[in-house]
Image (cartoon, rainbow, N blue to C red; front, side):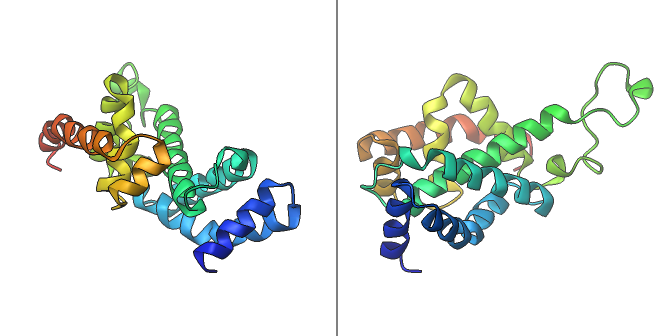
Length: 184
């Protein structure tokens, strides 16, 4: 489907058309899964995140303002769902043998799928950045991981392009040392 067709379908779904919602979710699922795979390299984790993203799309489609492309809004929903899935799985991870490690040790990357991915250093850096500078995380991920244009990011989060550029620049400066420590 062309972007204008997806936008029109999303507007119909926003208006309560259930058939349009079903078609829309089917149409954007491959794109959503690809976005989630960009964050979570283990396919099972990416599938979980994709499912969560599609549920969020159906429940929160009313928050899409209709001015930018639906797919740009979808991108943010999918990234946030992937990060949420990562956090949930990280919090659920337990030591392989608690008696050998005493109190909860770091999860074994060979047995914890979400931790086994190559994006661990980036996701950890984003978690750290989010604690002190939450406004920088989304623009930084959208630009540096997904290559979105500054203007699209600005439209999506509702701030001027100059602010987006400043947030990304400052976020990169804060994240770079964390990635260097991990070898990333």
